[in-house]
Image (cartoon, rainbow, N blue to C red; front, side):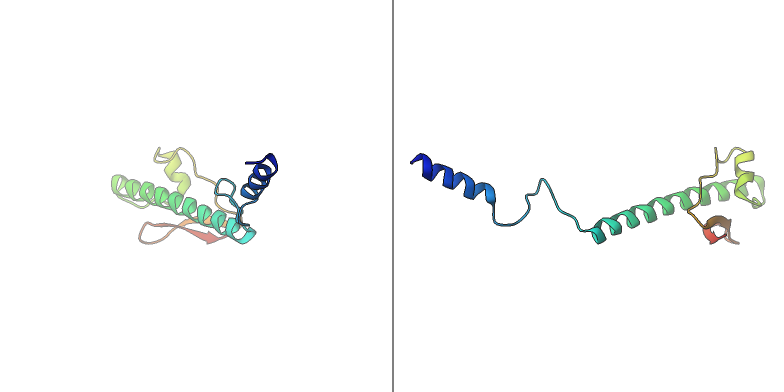
Length: 103
């Protein structure tokens, strides 16, 4: 193979078919935003589940529902109350489930 033909083949193979290689995926802004939102929602759901479990454990052991999450910290059921998302606060419903409410 001549050096000129070799270089032409090398350039053609490195140019590819117009698709991005798997090692460097290109994501569009909406996809990355959607992934971030899904990750945030999953994290919030996990925090709510953890807080609900602490509320229910406290209620069983104390034989009464806690008034708020700060009471769980005071009684050792939580080390701290995690920060709520902006504009929200944690609340406890009648089923002893923690949810996000508007401030």
